[in-house]
Length: 428
Image 1 (spheres, rainbow, N blue to C red):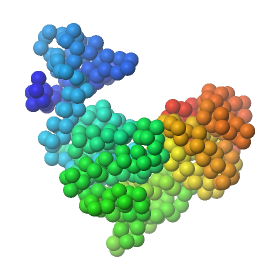
Image 2 (cartoon, one colour; image 1 turned 180 degrees about the vertical axis):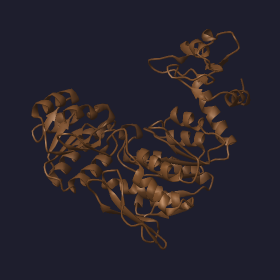
Image 3 (cartoon, rainbow, N blue to C red; image 1 turned 60 degrees about the horizontal axis):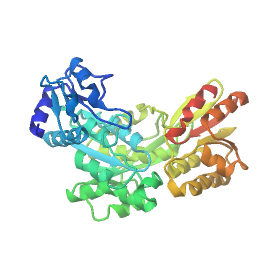
Image 4 (cartoon, helix red, strand yellow; image 1 turned 90 degrees about the vertical axis):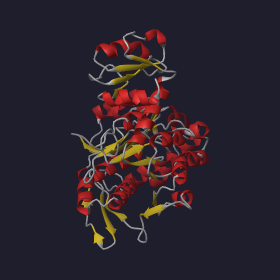
């Protein structure tokens, strides 16, 4: 089946699905394969449950009722369909990537743009070679804006995702020390993230650039830049209060916002707020609508969340961590005026040969800031058990913290996703 025929079938469907556990009648099923599963074996079940068709790449799973579409590679077909659908829609697509803050920036921007436009944004962290196509295939003729988050842990991946999503505008949140192992070091991270700008440059498309970030200014040299973030390049956004939640203000031309209270924690979120404001104003979202969207945004999924339990105040930022985001979180926490502050930090993954160096750098930064800490994970434990209280696993830390019965503390909880430090909440 050629792409036009597949697209016609898609248009007659109620959308796409890759999971028979939550499919809806009328959807088109794509039988993706992974290390521990083979979607081809569920093609029959998908059709029996009401799917209009099943895209498969193993002939033996053909149901012989005319509803299976045999292709060379299901994933390639999903990506090709998303690419074709993207070209068929009159929708402004804003692409974004970066080392830290992608998801928060995306969600803040989504909420701002929704004040004026029908807007679709990447769900959760579906920002890879499967998630980006699935997001694009949710676009309808009613959508006027799409915010597409692109993640990567190696070079060439952002270039590939840009080719699928074909953004009209783009921005990079920052360049930091994330996925050093896959990218091949810090310079590799810079090259990999810049692939979004490289794609947009071929189209002479605009990019939004924080004028206070010298790395991004250098990377975007010679491009059609829309600058923000300084007095000379407004809107300029500034921190007014950092606890218990982040407050900010902003100015643009003759407009001054006044103090705005958010539900976010961490001064590092100022840059995420700034790009949402800058893009919102570029697309003529009303200033007060922007403020309302940012005030009402509620962080979820363990990202910059402030939680209060019967015993402690928690700053929960345990969705992920890398050396750059860890430093920003600690710097912000050091400025917190609460008594009895304590960090609970988990290992940072995917650092390759730089792992020992970067974990020791975190320890040195803790000492510089004079912060007390409990460190969790084999990387931290092997290096610094003589300096800090350490546990090799989250389970060991859970047992110890249950016995310690901490109370009247303000706790920063941060670590890589694989550490799952949110499991500690039950005893905190």
